Length: 462
Ligand code: ASP
Image (cartoon, rainbow, N blue to C red; front, side):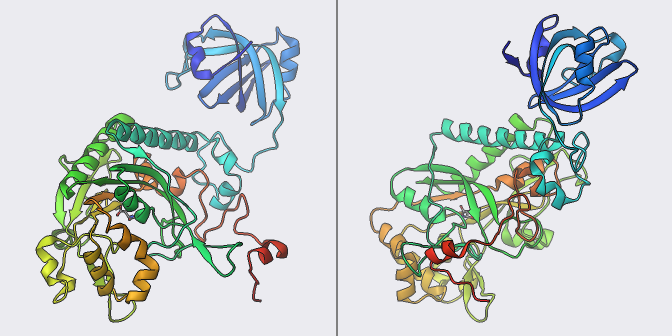
């Protein structure tokens, strides 16, 4: 008999079915054994009666997390035994035969309980068990719903999903980069992208007009707070648009997404309130205002926009200027005349989407003209040679009819974290790293054999 998923057998009362999954819990009641069977779709109560001695004897061997296949009859539960909280709470499976597919050692922590309080190092080492728990499973499913919804939403609006390289050259987003040594080119390196920023702009020059990507981004930072060395953005970019077009599109996307995947949530204010950077800092003392009416209400979502960020800020090392967001942002046309005289006063056409006090996304209208981009690089203290070496390809591309363009990149991890009411992004990333950037499950980072290092021209200094 072909296997049924647990969620599907609710509609099969009276029928004989075969199900498969894991023993979630076992309860012995005198001569009767009950188990809760779990598969990816849900939980099912299975009953082993003494009238079927053979199967009862086998059921006696069952322990939590054994993988099993079961055939039985789907019965309505007696009135008093119904559990309205479960999809399958009105039925149970009366076991006819049982096959143990694989035994399980006693798990290092209980999987039928919430694992939040379990030591995180242990949870990450046995992440495949942690992910079996109900809350973690639900988070993984929610994340899939979010990305699937966003993909469809964007496809319906003529966006196309395009992959960009992971082995690439640095793009300045203000963080340290992960570097990958080149075997074929001794002494040279790829870096992993902090974001697809330059590629998405080049795709606009390439005439793609509406791009998106569920993009992995890499930043080698000291792990302050709730950060991960790799994280995911919904990266998007559009040609021939104004800032207003980008904000409207993203705002509608968020409103529709919440309605579709988290209908229990309510958005505090629509249209999303907008603050200039200056207003936000004056009013909230922060450029990440939390606009919720009730910050303890799990179901309230406070979205807001912060616009008109400064183009530059004082460099963290000494005298000069650094880009407040990144050097590709378009300076506000009203302020361009101050670029030389008073650069710190120049606003950019750049914006953040803020949710519940978290920066969910940055974005901007970009520079698309060579001359202006070159000027910005110079103001950032780069000389001609390093501009050419690092960004010559961008300047050159802008000389071939680059269209005006802009976009943004909402963080998927943060978004799902907030929709799932989780306190940190590790709860919504299937295989996250620890606070000090290790993966206790795979054991990364790790040593490598000398021969492999030699091929990559690496010599470890003691
Ligand atoms: N690449 C930018 C970031 O990672 C987002 C954007 O400007 O679209 O913050």
